Length: 124
Image 1 (cartoon, rainbow, N blue to C red):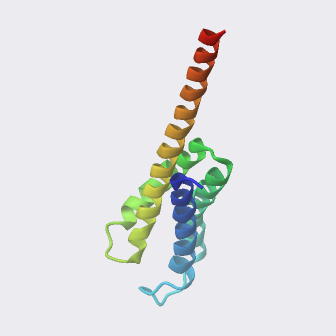
Image 2 (cartoon, rainbow, N blue to C red):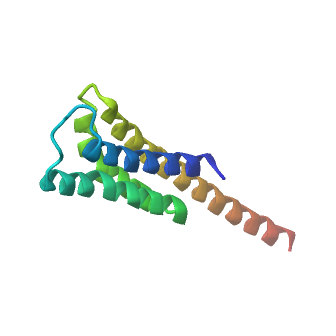
């Protein structure tokens, strides 16, 4: 397994875990999360984490980059508060790093295939 896959899996699993902690076991709030908060957090943090997990498993750098841009605004907002929820930003950066590394890996493989085809033509 490549490093991009570890980064993608860990980042998405971290975000999913932090989502449930934020809503159902928040150490900074004694008030339970309301329905609107659950929906918005699910839309802007849980859904991108699931997309990143799917992108990692399917080896799709496009899904990882979509997950990054999708989760980035709320992750950037949460990084401003001194709490464990700054880890949402860390997971968001993990999506970006995994997506870029996966894209570069596919580009390198494509170039190597083209180079080997060129060498095969020269040999013939």
